[in-house]
Amino acid sequence: MLNKLKDIMGLFFEKSESTKPFILIRYLMIILMGLIVILGIIYEFNFIKYLLILLGIGSMIDAFERLLKKENKSRMLLDLGVAFVWFTLFFLY
Image (tube, rainbow, N blue to C red; front, side, top):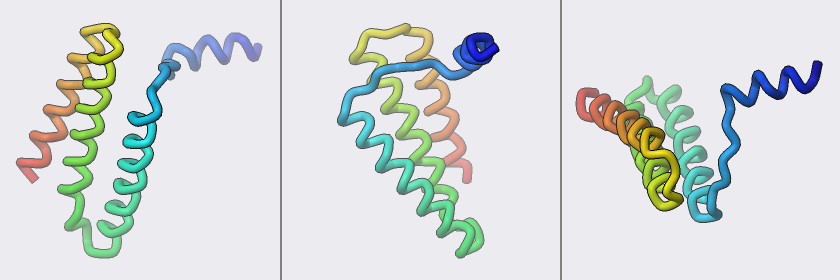
């Protein structure tokens, strides 16, 4: 039963190795996003624009990391597409 659950969860969550600088950058961005959400709640969501730019930068970092590791090109292009969507929402907000 437990192995079946692991197999199903493995379909949705992929394990990928990341280098230390990218992990550190990702954690710092998550902390900043949390602070922006808290400030957004306090100040009537005036800071959501900055959350969108951080999400776009995070997707760009993921794409750059995949490029450096020479992983699947389609996954890298997907990350770039998601980054484009975040940046578009940033400019429209």
